[in-house]
Image 1 (cartoon, rainbow, N blue to C red):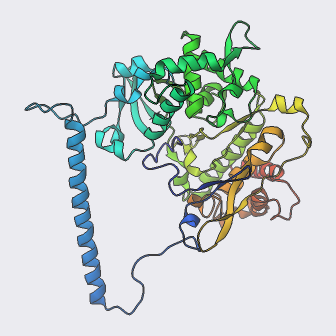
Image 2: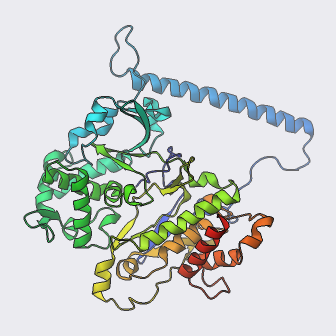
Image 3: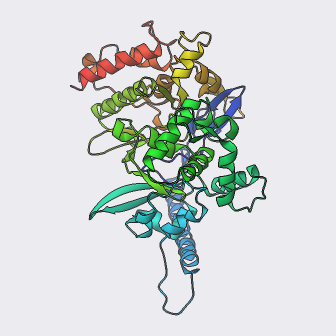
Length: 492
């Protein structure tokens, strides 16, 4: 499944180079470098000091340049050929202008509605007010844009607003979505999904406990789908559907349920953006709506992974926001807990004008009903559940390293966990994080002149990463709050 994406890094497969393994009920996520097959996690290429003569090295360099030139020529010719094929397939009349751009209306697949994400933005797209931009607008780039994420501009009363458009999945995952809808209706894979999804709405609905006379989706009846179905709760489903109806006010309630079901089966990001809105202070992109199988979100900026070498104060400000973010995920007026299960720096983006940080890929967030957990009085509910990394065998040589892990069963029944603090400290902030994108950790290289302003900072960071490493006798949550106070004072 996608990320949606880093706002800045769009090409390629989101899970490229990553392995996810399931052992018992644990999920383990490995980093890229250590999965490369080299026991040391790194491979070095090039000419070493082997006694070669200067002439031989120069000859090698010349041959290398020639190979690169040849490869560039072949690649350019191949791309030009693909461009002609894709753009010229619409007709062959003499003098007919080649259509080099993707057709946004075709990308929406709105003909499949209500088995889609919604229709709120269809008038804007049909009228050409929203247009694809940058390299993602060209037909030939569709082959490379596996994530199905596109740059766009929206002309709102003469002012251009930058957007990120997402199809929320790869093409093959969207095909599998159609097959799933058809199979659940008892039809063959080529069925009419517009009809089948309406049948499923009747099959998966029950009377709302909050709004008498209205129907609501039943998570238990839906069964398997995206991560939003984990930790099922009637209140959670009521909350998500109510948010979708509010956002799409004026549309047919049954159509909205069909849109919600389609999203639940594929990628719940639009539902989360509708329910936990940027206007209410949630650190997510502003959500503008959808048309067919395309959603439109605010363009935030460059991904966090590109801030590794920014000045320490800039990185400290971003770290502060990460801690505040997970504080909000655990304590907020909705009484839902949001758990991040993929703490990659590519899943966050930074507004370059304000340095504000937002989480931009919400596909794998787990939403837990805190009220239900408190009422259920689960055993050990008052005890802190401490997250631990797993040992992962990453290559045939048997090199072992730590991997990000979590137990869904535990997250669903324990109201007090340090999971989110583990995710940001062990995954992003501390040295040698579980994400190889940030090998030194976001908070590396404290300036000598500033160390006195950051008392016990290194020890607290180690304690937040792994409580067993520190000497301060603090749990992760306590260490994170101490870091929060120190960073606030430092950044005044």
